[in-house]
Image 1 (tube, rainbow, N blue to C red):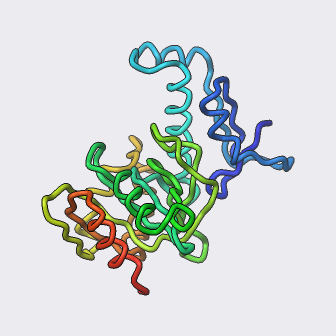
Image 2 (cartoon, rainbow, N blue to C red):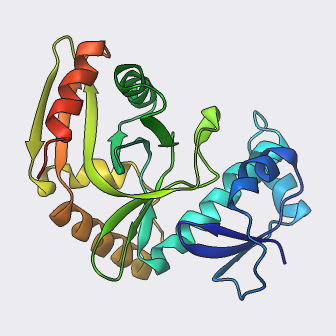
Length: 237
């Protein structure tokens, strides 16, 4: 077996190419224990996906489709993926979610510039896992799958806030009711086809929306925007 511990889930994962091997190295474990999840993609599967997506290499397909298997399975372990850039500071995670190109990664880099890269670290730059613990705590977890930047660390931290970004000329942030962002949450995760999986996802999202502070922010990706979001979201709740 080839075991990894990813968001507190033991995963037996095979890989054939360097990108996933390199990304997964920090999550490898040496214990001889039974895995919670097994991910092995055949050569035939990867070849088929590469033909369907000719702009991708087979190596890219392995990286992308192992993430799809993992995040779909994550639903059965009290978690889901949120397409976002997660920054870790002072022991808490802050997630910035938006459609591709809006600037979520740019915004978390501004936090690093504001606070220093030693104090503000990128937990996962594209696909952090959100886990709901048995005691009801809500955590963001690093995973090997973090988009084009490959920035992730094998740490979990309680989520202090989730902010949905929009581009705007003036910076404005406001805390909002969870119900007002459920559509954004659904648009930025993997939605399963089967009814049972969708029910699980909705239950998990409902718990997160009821316990984690939610924000909407219009911003122009200036340093002022980072100052504003940090001051608002890092307040002691």
